[in-house]
Length: 210
Image 1 (tube, rainbow, N blue to C red):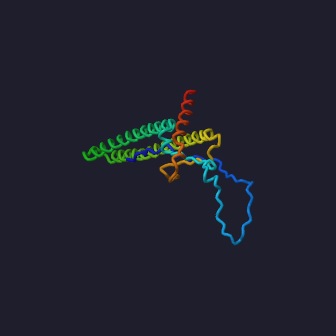
Image 2: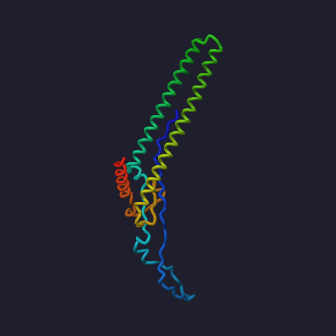
Image 3: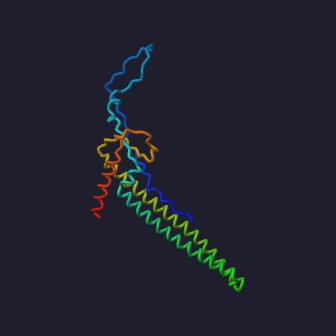
């Protein structure tokens, strides 16, 4: 029997916000003697002040575990998965019983005619085909429901970040899942906790209006 795998509700890829650089137009270019070795120019403001290029990241795994709406979607998905599993199990049990009854009848010589035997064999073959079709149907329905919830969650989070970053304090927000996108970053750049708190507050307010 094939079991449905419990997949993650979603892997959220947060859209990169507008990115731009700043350059001081008032600084005049100095003439350089061809014989003089020139070192690359470094803007000290960029080195000393990270606010020139404000970056943050969100840990997706923590977000999915802490965001109430994501937890609700996951619970709904798991219930659907369990319902499909029970339906599949019941169908398999029925087929197994019918097959064993056929075997017992065949071994005891219970089929009086060849036509009766062939009829029973045909019925078992159809049951087996229906069982395979049911498994494909339930699997497809589960995957479609999962994709639907993933899109719903992704759109909700994307809409939230437009509000969250309305003041444009961040020029770039990264999503990090299992350290795939961010190998190392100062913990000060991790805004996951604040994002989860704001998302849950927003979700709670929306639930009050329903």
